[in-house]
Structures are given as C-alpha cells and as structure tokens.
Length: 355
Image 1 (tube, rainbow, N blue to C red):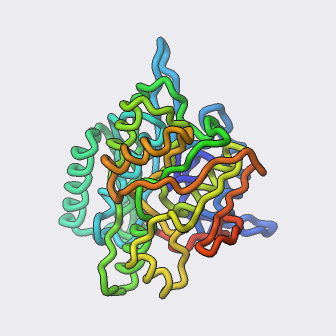
Image 2 (tube, helix red, strand yellow):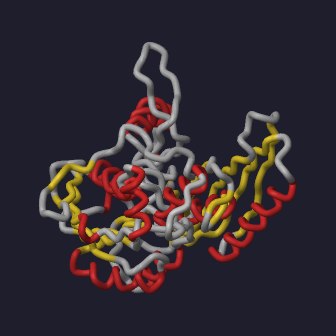
C-alpha cells in the first residue's frame, strides 16, 4: 500500500503527525517524520502482516494456484479540485496506477469511492468523472466498482476521492526496497517539484512569469518498457508527497542501506527553482505526481536511463546517485559546491493538501 502518496511503511494515511502529549491528537503534516511515527505507533502494530511489512507502494499477493497480484489504495484530498495540468480525478487514477507500477505490476482494475459535500455542483462532479475516465483509458485500466457518500455542507471540502487498484505481476523479479543492493545506481525519471508548486500557485492565486503545470501522469509505460528490455530492476518508487528527498529516505530506511546523490544532477526547471527560491521551499521536498526512481545494477544504469527517457514524461532521465552498504538509513547529498549534507525527513509537510 502507499501514501501518497507514499510512506515507507507501505500504509496510507492523510497528512497527520503525532502531537506528543498524554492524549495523542491528529494534525497536519503528511510525508514527514511525524506521519511515519503515527504509522509505526498506531497502524503497523494493529495490522502487522508480511505483505504490509514490506514497506512498499503496494502489497504483493500470491494467487492460490500460482501467480502474483499487486494491490494498493489511496485517498485524495487535494485542494483546489482543479489545478494546472490536472484535477482530483486525474490525480486519483494516476496515483493508484503508479503505485501498482512501482510494484512491477501491469495495472488492470480500479475502484473509486466518492465523498461528496452537500451543495457540490453536479457539473463539477461530471467534469471530474470524465477526467477519471479519460485517465483510466489512457493508462489501460478499468474502473469496475465504487461507492458514493454525501456529507453535510461544510464537512467535506467539496469532494474527496479514494481509489484502490489491482494489477498483475508478470515479472519473476521482486521489485521492492528489500531487493536493493549496495552498488545499485539510482535513476530519476525527470524534473522534480512541479506538482506541489502548481497546487500552491493556484491555491494562493500566485502568477509566475512562466506558468508551472503539474507533472501528473501515468507511469505504467516506462515500467513495462524496463521489464520488457530484461533489466534487473531492483526497486521503483514514485515521488509523491514529500518529494524526492522523502522517497530516498524511505528507501534507505526500508532497505537498511545508505544512498548518496549528487544534487547537481537532479533536474529542476528554472520556473520551479525560481518559485521555490521566492517562497523559501526546497524543490527536493516538493511533491510530484509523474516522476519516479529506478534502482538497477550500476552496469545497467545507462540503459535504464535511455529507456525511461524514451517512455516517461518529464525526461531526460538521469543517474543521480548510488546505493551504499551503510550506515543503514542514511541519505547524503553532495551540493553544487561539493559539500555533503544529510538528507532527512521533514518534521511536517511543506505544502499540505497536495494529493
């Protein structure tokens, strides 16, 4: 299962850090260390099982009689409902499709649950549903079941969408954090930070000289191309809530290995870099909805980058770092001037309500 976005636990939550008092409460701040604390303290002990404990974007499940399925679920609470490059419907479909893809699965079927606030215009709902249908058709999946609930005016923020997905795992590889190996290359599929900035600009009514559009897109095609080429893919991770930096920390912690990256090799467009500088944000922590990491043996890194660059949006793909033997869970970043610093989870979320 995944978050959003994804957290390293393999369990999805809304943005909720712990408040450390006698009575535990829930607040904002998804994708960071406090969300992970909440997952580790509440959800994982309650639901512990082998599939959940893999800490992946989805559960890999054996089918009686042979074969494997991937199964994932995700809730979407983005505000506003429409943003440059997408909307909550497109985001819901692509987010779930991408989580299945990160398991090495071919996405097949989705469910969709809608929580509607009383007073939501039917025309708005129709527009979002059409967007979902178009995104599903483009990704090659079918929405086969769902549910609808209506809550009182003022208690639903317009619309929330929850999707779950099932995909078929056709590769014999186990694509998961547990398969990472020291010496693996870390390949990034494209530029980072566009989704979060697009949401924030729309939400705050900001107008930048160069408009910033979300990178929201399905990633099944590049994953299928990697597998069809016979590459030894060890791990895949999409960069959603918490951005590139959080995804790297999740992989290092889940695998018990270390990761070192070169910041100069990470693509950040000039509009995103400029907006982050103005707003005091770090683009490495800003959410994406159409970018992913691919970890393969170093000897296959160049081929993986070429394949991803030919099939994934936002390219070219670049090799940004490598997996190391340790210290366990450590992520380091070499800066533009050659200095190294530790990359950690944020205590909260730079931009809440972005997925």
